[in-house]
Length: 222
Ligand code: CA
Image (tube, rainbow, N blue to C red; front, side, top):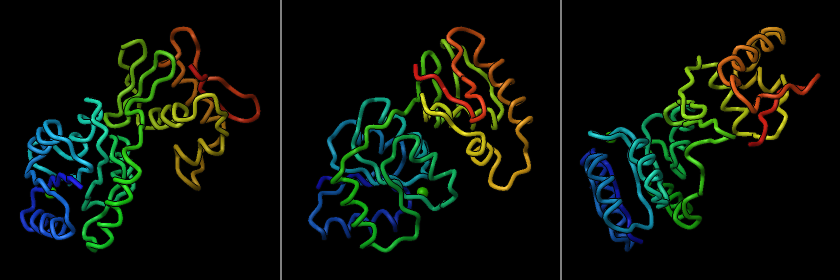
């Protein structure tokens, strides 16, 4: 396989280059995010191994830019951080899988094979319902091209609804997903909260957030 490794730590980059070459792969190495992006767009690779923390341009930005440029080369992200939110952000920006450092080389090889075999998952980088656009990487929402400032909780609720257009999300799942498990938020608070989100989002037709009486809420599918 033709593999691009984007890694600024010299020892790690050398380890990967040597290990992959020994496995019979052709390896190109980039030391900054910008260099990685430029090499990735000027040549064709079977898979890109991309560190998250990089000088000039971080790995998530590199991935997002590649996907925006319709480059669907599979991306395996290497992260020193294993916080769930970072993983979600990594996958949201268009990466196909991630591996937390430190890792065993044979685990790395197995993941690499899996990612390259199944190819890049076509995943919308931007969620769209009707004229609402939500960019999970930038946590930015617009309706009819006008930016809508949302609080973090309003954003979480909208993202949950937009990932499931046309499906009813129960009040319990909303409470659990937006406020966390075991929170003592009651249904009146949730209703008030949805009202506020509607005031920001549903200022025009069609009204997108629908109440499903006695059950929960739903985002109209387009
Ligand atoms: Ca790094």
